[in-house]
Image (cartoon, rainbow, N blue to C red; front, side):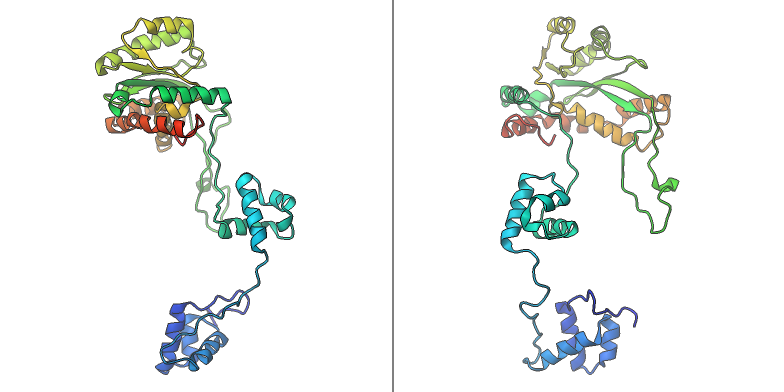
Length: 349
């Protein structure tokens, strides 16, 4: 019969199904009709009705205690498994099977099931963050403590800047809904890649109280050096700093930024350069802006370098609202607090 369960893998009757079966039986509905309505086996319905007959009227039989397949792992072994997984979060089920004697007799698949269903510890893709030494953490903590009292309004007067590389046809893995039996390599279900995609390095800046600042595209096959960086600052930063009344400037510790020439150049300007602890992308909100832009660029044609530059410029000038950039600037007190809570370690930002 269509929809009828076999004895293998049969599901237990739900409380709703039990109520319906008992009610229909009292109304005189034949068992065969109940089977069709619920898609249940005759024996399951008969057993329920037999148990219901010895109960008071309108009572629903409860599940027998102790029924079901015996547990294949005791609580002690489950506790050992939990401690091991928390101590070794990257261990695969195969490694766990080899290193935890208490679960060595279980299958890899069942170990995964226990971790997910019994321990409620799902497997997730690990976040990528810079490796920090004790010295780096100490510098990050010192930076956070120095600026812990700054308000959102004070951070809004900081001009944040950075460089980032954008690539044509930015390829990232994604999930697709592909029907069973379809060709995995059908163009609709693949991510397009280029072996050596063209790229462009972009410099930009923004302030929370004003919005976006200047933007600069480095020439092809050229990198930023102190001479070029000073030229960029003169042509694409200083006027924006004056326009927004920025009191501070933040850039990272890249060699061209930390050169004696650039330090001397910035020292003469009417604003202060914030100390930078290094290896701290989570403390420069323009990093979030770059990532936001790269995600947006997936939606447009960037198959060639001219198209990529045009799309970046359009997004920078028209696609970044002042409210969005202000929210990035306003997040700085939370970022600072997160660094202090983590003892200088990397944060979610």
